[in-house]
Length: 423
Image 1 (tube, rainbow, N blue to C red):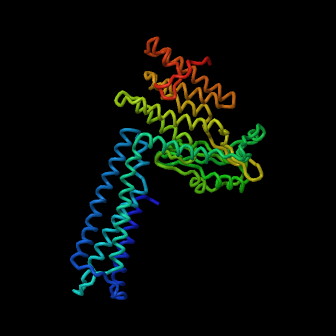
Image 2 (image 1 turned 135 degrees about the vertical axis):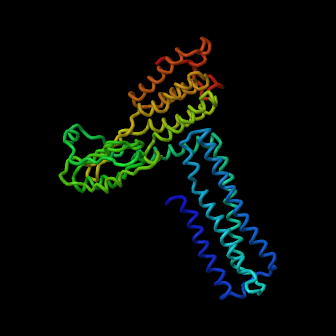
Image 3 (image 1 turned 90 degrees about the vertical axis):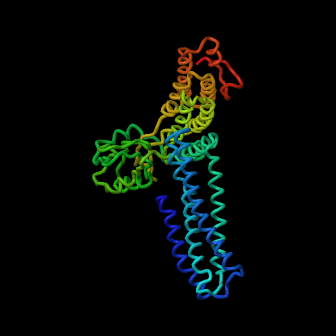
């Protein structure tokens, strides 16, 4: 549901309740009244209604602060994440509902000069008022989420979630449904019998409906090969997928709906995206305008944790089989080298001038190399360490600073552990 519909639903429901509930209470429950004076009830309801408008204005101010601060201090890609918080829209809806129902109840106080104050409607306004204050407190608390350690933790948690959902395991072993195809299966691929291209304005691929695509391929006894990966931006005439091994045409509309697009990248099925955000925060912190290498060191800690988890995954999971073990879907997935390049190259390029950053990079790379079981992956990590050594050797640091830079330190600058290892 579109987020702007949330407060609209609250407004519509509150107007409907305001037009019916006080009227029903007045005619069918005339004895249910409160003993407070008419002037006190009118003052209470007027203050409740007007106060909600003030709170609504404060909410917009909080939203602007969160959006501007996250864009300037961290990354523009975090704007939508903080600005589209459903809690904010639910709060606006409750505030508007409290205002509307307060005004509706106010119209039935001393109705016809009877001097009565409706009890149930007054209690409902009180409940809405308390709920509004609780939501307001929650939104103020949300401002603490803008602290850098909380932002990095939020991104890291989303990354851990998407890694767990993307790479499926059973008993510590790769799921057979995601087994890579054999050379014989690839040889039978043959030319595409149906090709689907994208038409429209640029969009990012948010996710694939894998179950639906597998079912469609199985129904026609074919194989669907995705030309783009999750996170790719598609433009006019970009190939999306091709269908092989069947003579039956698949529904173009259904295939398009199975490739879900969004205005920008999302966390769904995209383990690269949280790493991308963490790297963005790190390199922005390393810019001369900000010059905050400690933030970069904290971001490296989250990146290292994600890579430790990826190192235990079967990254060749871009192949999906049906229940009979027949290959039905292929889609591009990043390799181990892709993850390493994304995680470390830009931080190394922008952070080579900071002893704190290069020491933390060395500690992260050495820890990953020690934990990786696959020799090819370990060699890739060692190659990044050698590249880091080479960059330090060509940097503007003097001899003594280079010696310091070649030590690994999980704090960046704080606790030297080992000199440079030979790789």
